[in-house]
Image 1 (tube, rainbow, N blue to C red):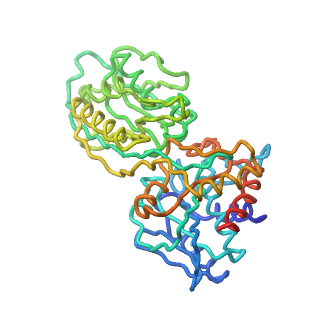
Image 2 (cartoon, rainbow, N blue to C red; image 1 turned 30 degrees about the vertical axis):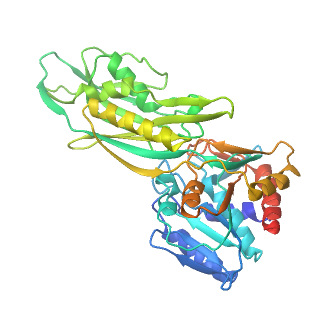
Image 3 (tube, rainbow, N blue to C red; image 1 turned 180 degrees about the horizontal axis):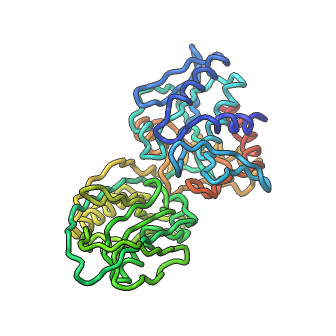
Length: 429
């Protein structure tokens, strides 16, 4: 599997931001035809490649969409200090690398089922709506991001959407001045696997500065994706005195040289909610070293008639997920928001079986510290375990750091090491 990195570089040039399908579908159709595989595409843009009379008992599965912090971005790969990175964008190693392992094995004529799913990064949409039939008894997902960890369980999640339309026009009798307040260049990161690292949340920081300066809110927009910790946020505020930068050194405040006799302001409950909201880790299990419950305030948008916020809640148990959902809905409603939920997926209860043990035995030949683990992130494995309850599933992957951010990078040696491991797993099944 010496061609994995070459394939990754090739598919990185194909537009694959979530919501963009056809360029990659066309590529896979041509690739499948070249190597003698049939290619099926369902109504949700999932792709299944297999031999005509396949006897496959193992399915390799990965999503093909990538997080783009700026729409329609095509990453420009650079190699530095043993890593592949991208210039001023996410890299798309999550999960272009997983797809590359699959394409490499297809090019070697392995009789497997190869399932490429769509829109994982915006709510596991493809996996949730899969219309394609699988015959395999086993599934290997290659969407994990830490070498040596064999994932056998993951968090469930739900997306929560709040809408507040309480605003008013007031006469500027107290001589308020207008200011633009902006924050950027924060580290960002994945709202599941990075949530315990105390990565600063741009929306929370802006709200703190607004609240503690007794400012009025006229406009606010920020956050990139519902599963990312927000990096960039900008607001227009009115304040009696020049605001003080309170919450973070990256905040910039600029006076707007415009006088206004009237101000169109949003209800103070919006900033009060964000200011008081307990963002981040809610519970942590020290015994298994994993976050149990968390929630991330991911996006905020000012529209003509409302301010909308998006939050992503996660839990390692379905019971915990239900509790954090109910608590958040109740809190939002208390602050004047109407609430909807979407994108729910179940937790994947850790499952140790002959498949996972076999993978562990193989992995330990190359890494004596390899272990079975559970992670605080949503993997499509949870959905497939629910759809195919008798299927044995595991997830592995190379070292990918800071996914969903401009700092994303993948370790070249780790990709090469995992190539050997994946090939041996495939040979065994």
